[in-house]
Image (cartoon, rainbow, N blue to C red; front, side):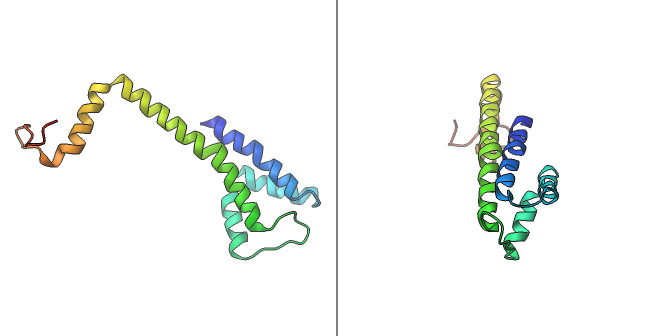
Length: 123
């Protein structure tokens, strides 16, 4: 999980440096600090909602937000989903009997009698 976040922290500054290549180093440092403090989604949303425009930028604020969201999707969300599916499958394989009883209890819970016998939809 840490590798996914770190890959995002490594790739996004490359986009920021490309976006602000004509800006001063203080401006680039400020943008890098926004990235490192994980405030990029909030800053992007603010810039898009206020229609922030800078004439020296390579792209407008909406395009920058789309690129940043794409990077987050590719480096965090999709690998995180794959990791969760892998862990879920692995835990299911370890305790298949427990998982089956939990699934059965979850699906048929409302149909069970207090004594524990199920109704006509016995599995």
